[in-house]
Amino acid sequence: MNASPRIVFMGTPSFAVSSLKALLDAKMNVVGVVTAPDKPAGRGMQLQQSAVKQFALEHQLPIAQPEKLKSPEFFAQIQAWQPDIQIVVAFRMLPELIWSFPPMGTLNVHGSLLPKYRGAAPINWAIINGEKETGVTTFRLQHAIDTGDILLQERIPISPDMTAGELHDTMMEVGAQTLVKTLHGLITGIIQSKPQEEKLAILHAPKIFTKDCQIDWQQPVAQIHNLIRGLAPFPGALTKVDGKIVKLFITSIVNENPKEPIGSFVTDGKTYARFACSNGYIQLKDIQWEGKKRMPIADFLRGYKKAD
Image (cartoon, rainbow, N blue to C red):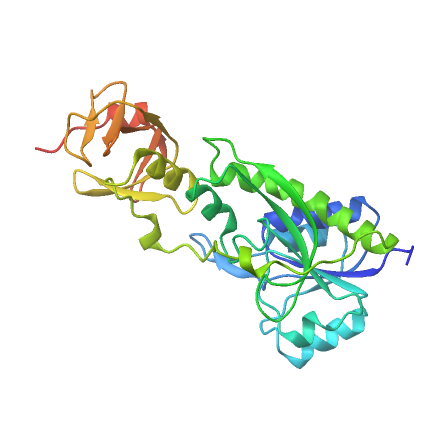
């Protein structure tokens, strides 16, 4: 196959927009876009369009926003578009009737080097676990989530202080280019899919819950630092200062033996704030009181009075 196949693209957040843009920039034939229904948001609860919908409207692409992916109406729309291939980037889990419909199958762009970190939060868990490298994988969808045959992988280094937000932005661009390379490879026949090695599927990336965000100051300082940066900027690592819940985002490690009890909040009231850990300190660069805006630690300390 040398001509661009008919592509239906499925995605919702800004992460997916980069891939859709890359397809258009590469002159690929996108015949339809599927994204989430508009949802009320903000103080006025006005209906908000997804980032993918906004981009699709700007580029006059046909759009579908199914409430239910198993509805006959949605399947009829897919049939009407007659895709040769479908591409999924940051979208919902598809029923088999949908993902198996195109003759070239359905591709997914996943934020890890599969089979490592299958699941909803691969970017976060790679950093939380202290990985020095991750990547993106394009693969064919099949019934079990994130288990399909691999098409292409690109590696991404993780620097010692990189946050999940920074990795997200890097991966967004790498993933978009990897997707285009994958499609070119499929069109020209130079890419062959290969099964995932199940014996390597030992690290998982489940959805992040509030319990996963709680900092345990008994843990080694490097492990705590990884947790904080792996949850920054969202949802944010949680602890307490003077009995009040705070979120931490950007930190550094101070390799000194703490004089204070583990978990103590230590500050000179002017220039620094840190928490004592078992084998060092976590120094804070910013902080967010519950219900307040995130702020640099210097701004926080100007208004901070230690509780008696």
